[in-house]
Length: 384
Image (cartoon, rainbow, N blue to C red; front, side, top):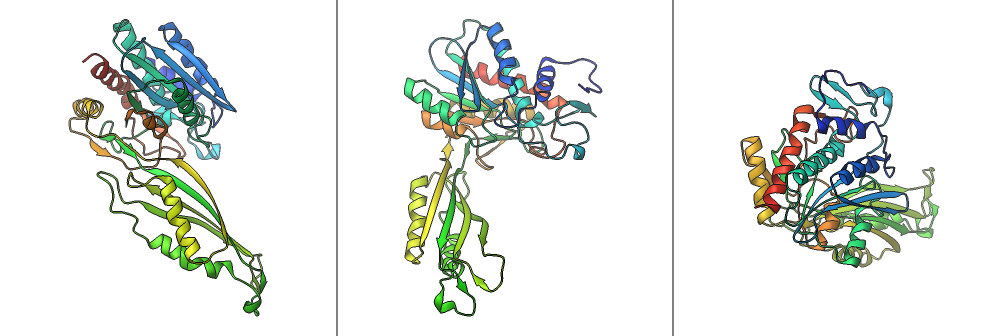
């Protein structure tokens, strides 16, 4: 493990490095959760391993009754890409100029390590604390997100598991730790649209039916539509076409089929099924012979003003010296599966500038500040 400049290793830095050194490309956990479970068992947490398909999930709980605060994270990472493009091996953590490099440093093994350290400190100081404190981890956040928190939430719903508040450790900060508080996320809905035509010679269009020509007016209408004017802090709903494919490779053949991929990022004005109906109404109105395969990636969620949001604002302002921006931007997170259980959800984590990139990194100073931020939030919610 190449750790230049690391004369002394803090608990959170040491654990982060241990996790980075375990290649856990989604959905592989790389035994990260086993490492974490051993530590939490030593702190008297009850640990439950929920294995679905190829996915590992860890549910660790301390306390017996009362309001439940969950720290939510993932141990899987995206592929590193060409290793020769990295300044150092992506799975050998290295510190250079006060910055820790490695795949998962920011997204989100650093936050997971900070969660663990904060939990250990909290229960050591408050062994008989009120309420319950829990950690939920998955190895399926960066992948299909089917057998991870989505599946765990179904299990929780079946057995009546209560979650009041949830803090996700996604890298939410923009330029400095604590400058942004994520209070919601848009929903995501994807479609694979197949439009059927009749193949033929381009010189005899009357003997064919061109699915590209037929689909263009409908696609133009969907792309140009203003779906809404936004919702509180959410931007307007957006539909983006990401791929169009048709043709045989010859320029004198009218294709018999067109495939289109598009995605909607939507705010709480909509539910996924409503958007599906709206889109298919347009397709039918234009007379298309089509099939649409929909994937509901998750509904939007929003945490209004309340105890969790107020506590987070106060803790982050004390750390950063200014109140954080409060945002619902960005993509999605696993909190979208916890919010429907009735939980208030926020996201707080390190700077996100390098996530999913070559030479992913996190400031060592920020990493070492994270456990204190999470600890103060836990104390505010369970001890106040």
